[in-house]
Amino acid sequence: MANDERVPAAWQPILDDLERRHASARAMGGAERVARQHASGRLDVRQRIAALLDRDSFVELGALVGGEAQLPADGFVAGAGTIDGREVFVGAEDFTVLGGSIGIRAHAKRYRVAELALQERRPFVMILDGAGERAQNAFERYPRSPNDLQMLARLSGFVPTVVAILGPSAGHSALAAPLADLVVMSAGACAFTAGPPLVQSATGEVTTKEDLGGSAVHAASGLAHAVASDDAAALALARRYLSFFPSSAWQHPPRHAGGGRFADAGERRLDGILDVIPADQRKAYDVHAVLRLLCDGGEAFEVQAGYGRSIVTALARLGGEPVAIVASQPVVRAGAIDAEAAEKAARFLEIADAFHLPAVFLADTPGVQVGKAAERQGILRRAMRMFAAQSRFRGVKIHVTLRKSF
Image 1 (cartoon, helix red, strand yellow):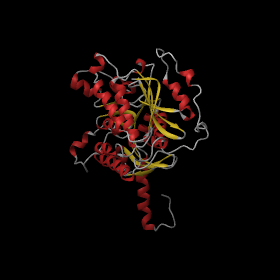
Image 2 (cartoon, one colour; image 1 turned 120 degrees about the vertical axis):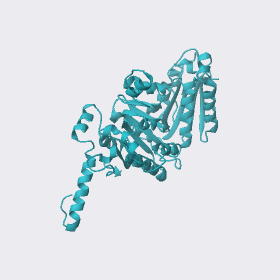
Image 3 (tube, rainbow, N blue to C red; image 1 turned 135 degrees about the horizontal axis):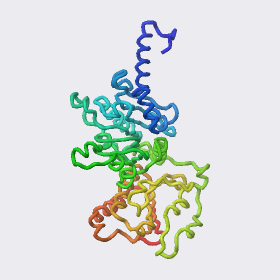
Image 4 (cartoon, one colour; image 1 turned 90 degrees about the vertical axis):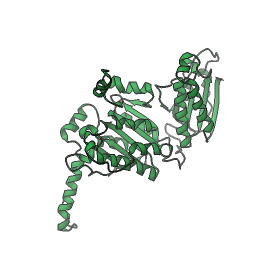
């Protein structure tokens, strides 16, 4: 801190020391490690937070946790900022500090920032890029209990939650992802309960990080709701997803006033729909073409596009109002509802219901998938979970039968 005539001389060394400590925390794992992160095509942890949040809105919490130079911020940067002017809380693992592993003090920060999100009724975003529990934790006493995973479970249905996996994520770190409303992965990211060395030691199976838990694996497994080309694109998806939701379950979704690319947000007819949907029920069509006609600006944010593909789940705006769309996809098994599609739709409806988004059903389906494979995948249980989610849905529901609905 530069000398300031307004500061008593006795305080100047203390303030200078404080500034030096903050500068050390901002340096992350050091210039060499940060450069390696950049060379791999990934943003560093502070660039990621800057890309996620509105410019200059981040206020850090616990920057000095972990010591001055040994463990800057203890490998976990946390705080609050804004997205489109609305406050959110964010926590991000720093791979340049001991591989983003979770230290005892980082555990406390992870829990506290999630706790604040619930207390203040604000969305919570977690950025993962770390190795899970730090080995040294076995020699220290945990500062508090419960941990951040229990707090993340408590957030569900009360505030929107997003996890962005932007690098290797293992163990405790990876376990945060399934607890979130939205999981977005960058193309080179990985997530697994244990990495390839431990898998080989425990099972004898030889694999790579990508084959074990890469983004393509988890787009198909259902863990990843969206996959982006790089860090910046993944964080842009997180921002866009949150734009459809209120800050908490105690508010209603934000309405778009129209104009710009949403100039068609007023009442209108879908005069082109008969050109999209064939009259012959034996002919398939892509329901995305219907969504482009229906949604304001022709825009829809599809969730879990690579999983349960006979149903399309998407967030969009109709007349400026955010809505949750559940649409049959006739080009996949004629739109028959299989186990994955039912599971996907059920979870999507539960999240939409928690945050007061109306549900729009676009049906063109022969019904629930039949056959030995379907039964072995638990179609009865999963289809009835989807039924229960629809039945319990408390908000506005609009059903449109495009051709058939059995």
